[in-house]
Image 1 (cartoon, helix red, strand yellow):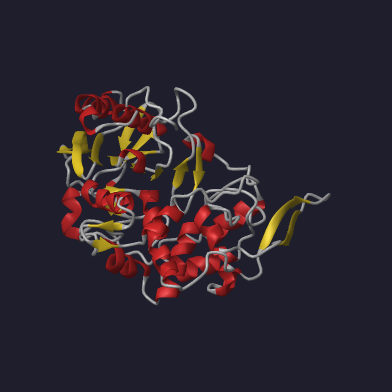
Image 2 (cartoon, rainbow, N blue to C red):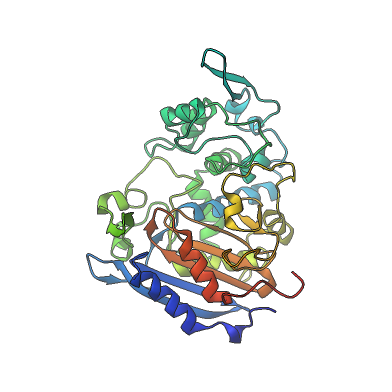
Amino acid sequence: MSVETSKIDRARIDAALKAMIADGRAAGTSALIWQDGREVYFGSAGMADREARRPMRRDTIAQIYSMTKPVTGVALMQLWEAGKFHLDDPLSKYLPEYAEMRVYAGRDAAGQPRYIAAGRPITVRDIMRHTAGFAYGAGPTPAHDAYVAADPLALTIPLAEASRRLAGVPLLFQPGTRWEYSIAVDVQAALVEKLSGQPFAAYVHAHIFEPLKMADTAWRQPDAKLPRFAAMNVKSGSELVQQDAAEAQKLNFRDNALTPGGFGLASTLDDYQRFARMLLNKGELDGVRILKPSTVKLMATDQLDPAITERAWLPGKGAVGFGFDVAVRKASPQTPEENRGAVGEFFWDGAASTLFWVDPANKLTAVFFVQTMPYDGTLHRDFRAAVYGPDYRGPAGD
């Protein structure tokens, strides 16, 4: 069975959004769904800013964190279409700082860290599917400690310096052997700069945001848009506490040197839905082509070899593989607890619990906004169940 337009249950989705507010998991929620080329649902509940008593509205600007990553992937794949690189080229061909990478190999008998040479170069494909071996913050090994000391995502440095700092940090594993979510998408952004000769934000604005009419999406938001900006909310025990405004605004209302590829965008439901619809339409929207259909298909195809069995928390997303900057559903939901969805859908989410997905089988796209940290996957489970119905397992034959 498929989700027919007439079967989108508006009341069920409304109730799900309101329940997230009532049970204290969110201060404000909103969602926008398109299917069969038209809008079939918009709804919101709660507050964009509880202290200011500002409701969550359609034009609220929210921080989307890692939903920045698919945007960066589209930018880099535009340059691939232009013949600027091959996917299996060594990364060091374009960013020479990655030519001599070391890999953490445990400790010796005296308890000292051991490092060995990388068995093969990091490739561009590796940085697009999170198999390069990079870290992404603190962790249990000396390689994680080196990452923290290097501080490659300091907002005070440009992308080129971020890349140079990262290249001095040992890898966690041999390239191509494991899936580990990482800073790799910020390396993609540095590569976009190198290959295009433009600042990353300028390239993305000219080649993605402007053609798609995504007028409210940016890393540095104009000060005049601050009244539309959603507050961030942080769980503290059983309470949801509104984050200090200066902290919440530091990525989008301050002149930072860093333009991250992996996070940092703020956007609206309508803007990000235009990006999602472009992907559903195989790279085109309203007569403007962003990518070729074959490129979108490549990005939305599982890129992980079966031999890559160590996949960190990725299996927690469901029966999925990973393409280029998006997870890809490979099988129908396997358990009642798994997020509802159809085979072939691709999606990603953000640290503040935002979510989007593209469902070609049902000709559907959905964008869900909330500003709750840390990430709360139960919000996605409940929203997807409201969209598809709690018993949905995908179109017949999945």
